[in-house]
Amino acid sequence: MVKLKAPGFSKSMLVLGMLFLYLPMVVLIVYSFNASRLVSVWAGFSTKWYGALFANEQLLSAVWMSLRIAFYSASMAVCLGTLCAFVITRFKKMRGRTLLSSMITAPLVMPEVITGLSLLLLFVQMAQLIGWPVDRGMATIWIAHTTFCSAYVAVVVSARLQEVDLSIEEAAMDLGCTPLKTFFVITLPVIAPALVSGWLLAFTLSLDDLVIASFVSGPGATTLPMVVFSSVRMGVSPEINALATIIIAVVSVIAFIAWFWMRRAEKRRLRPR
Amino acid sequence: MNRKLFPAPVVERVRAVLFHRRVVFGIPFLWLMLFFLLPFALVLKISLTSAVMAIPPYEPVFRFVDNTLSVVVNFGNYLFLASDSLYVAAYWGSVKTAFLATVFCLLIGYPMAYAMARAPKHWQLVFLLMVMLPSWTSFLIRVYAWMGILGNQGLLNNFLLWLGLIESPLKMLNTNFAVILGIVYAYLPFMILPIYTNLVKLDVRLLEAASDLGCRSITTFWAITLPLSKAGILAGSMLVFIPAVGEFVIPELLGGPDTLMIGKVLWEEFFNNRDWPVASSLAIVMLALLLVPIVLFHRFQAREMEKHG
Image 1 (tube, chains in turn yellow, brown):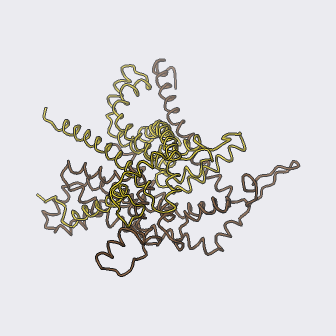
Image 2: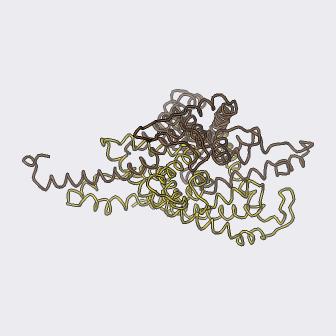
Image 3: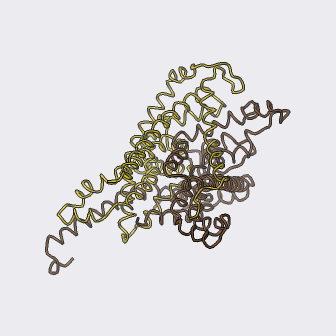
């Protein structure tokens, strides 16, 4: 029996790598409580930057805008991504399938400046030809985010679809279920966890996007990353540290809940009957 | 469908299934054609126009005046890109920076993924979540964190001064070093995840066989583990390299005036100079450069998504 332990080198790399990933975030959290504006000085504990953050109306309205766009984009991306995943995993002989699978994997790696520029040119052209969109803003950002988020959803959902037992669906169809009913009664409950994680992933991706949104947005719509970017460009800002701390805290809580659920599911699966 | 061979209800059912398939295929297909493929055609079109002071700021390619359709194609933007050393240097700088960052990601990420794949099952889940968690927070803010660390008055310089290792602050922020560090930091999870997924599926019996036949563990690694994880390494490298070539945020925040990267140049051409045709031709050339890596990545990803468990 071969020992399947990781050698010491890779173990210490894991520890160092985790430190590398987390230390900068710890620094942000610590400095969000620094009373001084400067990084070099520790002027004592203070929560005043959090107060400043919640008094910043421009930032708060950008947060609300980003949350709404992320909600709509993630919901639409789950629909489109799931359809794509179905085509890729199930319809092996369909004409046009190769083209669809190229179009759905390309956004995973496509540089954001290219995606942003190309969509903006499309919207400008559309406005000339059909008169829509008159003003770029929430709707155009929603379309752009839906398009690239669908790719990530398709990856997550197709991984789950590969594991689904086709015989149950076939049984339902043999017993007279229509394809649509089979999907809602049999397939949907089985792939629901993947849809939830795909939705969450799409939500965070949309919330985080600066470059694509900057291209396709108009003067009316300012998202959170745009506000953060214009403030960060000027240098270190304690308010942004406070914002970072809040984001990290929220994500950590969600990750902890996810871990708890997954561990419970794992234990239940392993429990002897 | 022949009605004589099949009873009517069967024909109905097959029709229903075919109709559903067409809808399932048609909706995402039309969406992606309109919002993914068509835009690239437009970028190509506008890269062949010349800039004018108008809204939108480019000349039309097709003009229909006096019953004659005239097509004006301008290759000037591409000639301009080739003749100006700034753009050539920016492409070269991007490829070089992205390549170095990919190598460092691989050197750090592979051992991490290896240790994760060999860890006990319940720890694997914890490590996996820990690797993914940073990418669920804000990309922008994680890049920004390094501004406070690397600056002349920053944490790292203060620490090194305090240790007495350096006399005066080192210039680390706004250098190419900071850009590479930022890319490695931001993209490391995307390198680790595919390699981990690959290593965790590795057939343990192969390693046992090698050790039974007297292979030392290092030889086993080079002869078996590394070649079998090739697909994961390739996918991870493409996930880092391709977006890193077009990166804008990292060179903008961490880079200096001598940091030439094409994503930043494109952004400036578009937003500062309002030269849409030049920005479009920059995008087309970048796409052409990245075509081979994108096709490689697509082939890996399509195989991953199609295989049946």
